[in-house]
Image 1 (cartoon, rainbow, N blue to C red):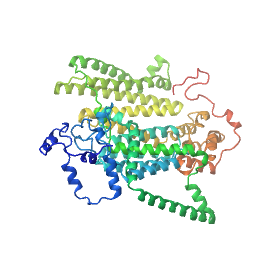
Image 2 (tube, rainbow, N blue to C red):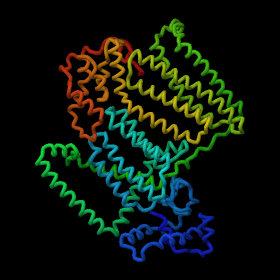
Image 3 (cartoon, rainbow, N blue to C red):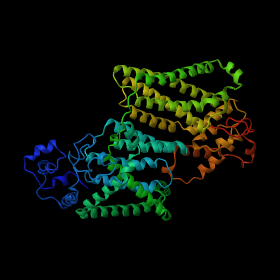
Length: 599
């Protein structure tokens, strides 16, 4: 590993007159070694007799420097370095595909980072083997501290967008702690990982934001190597200190085991408390726990390394397209706007009261008419966003008139597309009112609603500038995933279907569908009369009451469902359920049709 101290330890090769030249020509081979005056000033406050650990660390960080003497020096400093290295510092990443995007190597790993990484690994081995719940937050907190300490040691400052990504990622990890449903939990965990990676890299361009959300994977191997080198450097001169720490830890563990065993044997309530708090780890789970330990260790080291030396993913750019002439660029978009306007006019007539004429011509009722076109309108919205992106790439850029033309044409297209979004959502509302809510229906409706938010952000960027547009869209996506998880989609599905049953809009509730919902649906399904209630809750009760998941792997939704079912368990043996919930239509189609239902 190369850092500033290793550069400073080289003997000067030029005369003192080369110093000013080195400040102006950092890539010059003759000027590269002229960094001696600055490190000398930093070393003046040190005591004349350094301790053994400090001397060992200094020796380890300076080792291997001559082997890279032929590597060309890096260019001038840039805002992505955040003090991790000085202008002209060597880049230890080599000449790979991302070498030009990497800052200089981070400084030697600090003890606070090492202890935070170790805590992450231990907590991962203890808590992540039994499921997902609040344990994700417990594990992520020390990993975040490791990244924070590493960033501070490298000279990086906490910026507003970094804090936004970090807080958003932690908030998303509250979804597994609150909801039992697996599909919103999966979306929340993936989004939290993406926001955490963005917090570490801090990109702002389109490609930078997209790649940075996955960029943490690029830091796994360098992070592990960085951690191993740091441990070796500190262990060489700190054996006495490590021995003292091990002895202290061993004495503390012995005291806890001895007195904890005595108190547990003396009081049954205290024994139960210890049993609930302590993870249940068996010898047979040893390989699985070791894997989780290694996973937590590598993940925390990758996060710390990315925080100390983030890859400059904003350096990955796509050259702008060739500007087109005004007529060549605007005419196809104007024709598309006219087509949108004609379609929207018909939609307004149909959806706002002119439906009888359409029914007489097509023979479709409200629900069938809504079902027929929702997916087409969803695809139309997605393709419109693609058209806008391509149009901006080849838009004319000659002056103020060209900017006005681009804003007028694309702004009109965005407004018309917003009306298409509203039409699609109205169609879905009609269909759900007729046939009920399902997971797919609520998911695509949420997707369509988010696309409308993206269009509003594009309109705002046309007025106020597009500097923050990539990050604003990323924030809107994360906020949508968080809201989707917190609203409990399985709970909403059960609530809407139970409400339709209570209001008499359906002759029966689809037991075959609602019985496969998660424990989040129990409060709504608990309102059903018998035997519908017992038929809907039988499978959920078997999963909840017979679950041996510890407290840190149990969500709030599962705990609430367990409390409800313990007070009022299901009745019967399930034979009465064969004829329940199969009256009328199911999932929006008749039982004697071909069985296809895109919803």
